[in-house]
Length: 479
View 1: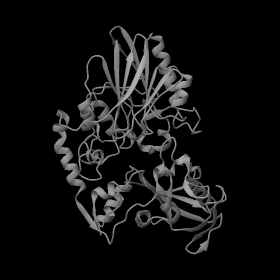
View 2: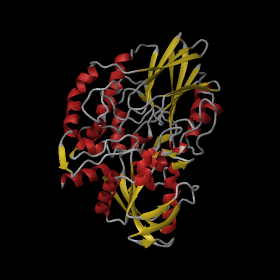
View 3: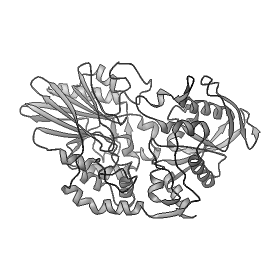
View 4: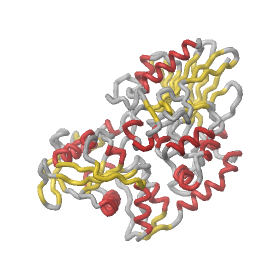
């Protein structure tokens, strides 16, 4: 008896065949994947979360409709867990999504303290006399990244312990085959077993080594992975509906075969149903909002890190204008479009792609120096400048390099990290360790994420509820 498991993760609202960088149709997106997926009573569809936020479609639905639209698009999913970005738009938006999903929510390390959202640690599905156990967990780093007001009703506990408790429950029920849907990635190189990260953000390797799930369906890192860790098959799918994972299981022998499904362009009922919404999204994106003096476009990553970026400077100037802070920092997503002279909403949302809000912190000269040292660990030097492996493996993290504005500083990136930053100047005056400044950044970085521990306990001068992308849009609309 062959069981088919089809898994998606990190769709980020990319349902239609587009990347929203332009209006061109591309062979991508969840609804195009559905053209290659045939569901029957021996097939289970799973999703690993990070679905409510990320694309222009997701942003438009949040602003103008509600998350029941997303739930309807995902009506074929049988079992799913949540991703860290599913908390970004607040409790009620997430609650509406869950209430309208036909599939079952499995998340063993999350509890709704009000009892309104029902989180089950696991489920059991019987197929042809076999008991299939399915559990779910999300990285507990949600507690670090997410805005506090969005987590008031939730208790999020250790992901490993949640998975372990769920597996114990499945074993007591005498299941024949056990699956973990994990919104998190792998902290090891799956070929060599070498540990790539010391943090607990991603613990897929540990889950496979220390627990005996037959199959782990992961996400979060946006990578295409299919490999065994011991006796556990470890899977991860690329983001944005680029591919789905297909695992075929012989339930008699527990032998597994993995492959990846690619999208197929064409119509289907859900595309037809939501075509008008998609067209409204595209029209909304193409609304002209300003005329700039010139284009502000991204350049080579190393060049921008070494020489600076006019695009980053413009965003930083807007943040300073909005907050009145002394110093500003911003970062770029892994893929951005830049701002065209004839500026549209599309340009802004494809340049500032994060759901971040803005925070102003008080920082002294000593912590500022530590932040600059951490920041420029992004660059390695071995006779030539290159991006450090820790920003590329196990996944690309260009967004963890920040562009500083409002200060000048000496740097020598041929030296080792910790000795690279020389004198720092603010308005032409050398900065002392005890000097204090106001520093504006996004709420993600303010948590210390990306290795910036020096920000964690700084005094918060002001929190702004408006998303940074909205601050940018408002600024340009007034030009």
